[in-house]
Image (cartoon, rainbow, N blue to C red; front, side, top):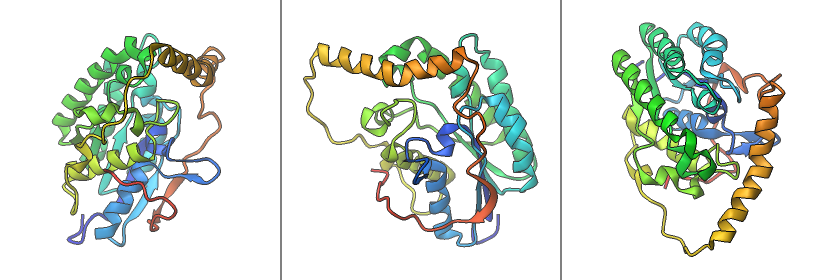
Length: 268
């Protein structure tokens, strides 16, 4: 890192880092990593940024497909976020998943990069039907936090605040953050990195909203979600398919960071 700030930022991961839920495949995806790059670039105008993340990738795939290209770019800042796609599948070996993530931490920090990661919220508090795997998410967090400590990786404790599971921060599929959620994740990582102009306002709860939704309406919403999002996801698993089949990284090379346009979502 130069005296003026970071020079090269590379993001590794899956759909969350790719930016699903913040834009679309027609207009383009933004996401928390793009937002973080924009914040870094405000103080490091020469920043070059690559985003190697691809939706559907498990931790082992992120390591196998993205680590070598990332190392070749010699980043001085990298983010590594992977593992959610693993814990969603039966028979997930959390030690193996964390081992892949730790291997990426080790390789990037050994090359001199500042590396950051984040903690996953309890998905059972966002999607009631996902409660059976909530403990797995928290257990993976603990393993990743320990691995981060061994390699000096910066951890954004995004799961430690009630706002993280506010439905208004999540997209309709409840698996990906919406624009406001992505903005808060970017703000959390920026604060963990100690970037200029970062603070803890991302932890604040959203304004209270009216409650009193009937039990039947809640059940109906769960059934609609299951039919629209869960059913297709299960179908892909049964066919051995992934949402990322045939997809490439949206930003596979280091490029200058452009000023954001057409989106005013903030972190608060």
